Length: 250
Image 1 (spheres, one colour):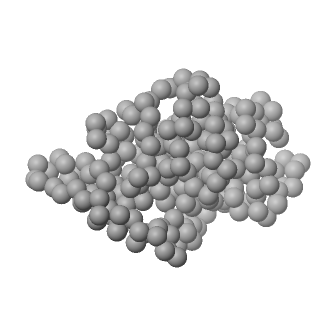
Image 2 (spheres, rainbow, N blue to C red):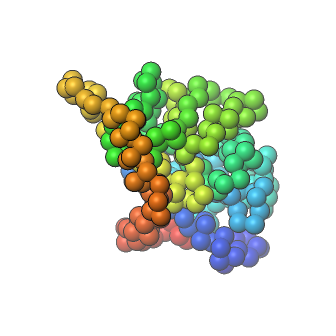
């Protein structure tokens, strides 16, 4: 396939389709926010380049061919002058530099996460099944909207080895080796936070599992051959999009 005058490899096209699919799915599951947020994916074989979207497109209209290649400074490689979002590219570049294991980053504004982001205790450990992936795997940082270099470096530091980062009074980022993994953690984190808000708002007593129980639950999800990373669910999510509106892959 080609975009403009450049031929696109099958591997890059597959990544573009997964990335566009993640945008559509974030919108479907209530994690889009007008033009805010992003899905970025490191290009195969080009560790210092990644795919992002032109600033101004909405999640529900994203297509594989819309995505543009940028360098770590957020500058478009193929289409100089294409508007990119510095609030997307700067923190993404910082995370990619710090985490060679990360190839996809989602920054989104899920309502559940934004609510928990304002709570002093953050996400409670293993309160629900959806919270299990984030047991000792969730960082926090104060929200800031300028995304200056020092703050972007702090983002990578606060994310650390974790699967996700909550920006206080703002939003979240989830990371993964693949787009599907990053989406799975975004989906799970938002569900976990929405459930926590419902549980705590009920006024009924609730039980936070003890450490021994949390350890056991986490080991069940990540301790053996099985890994809860979205790889099982992703093909079905893509099939759902193909049925509903396959234009994301164009």
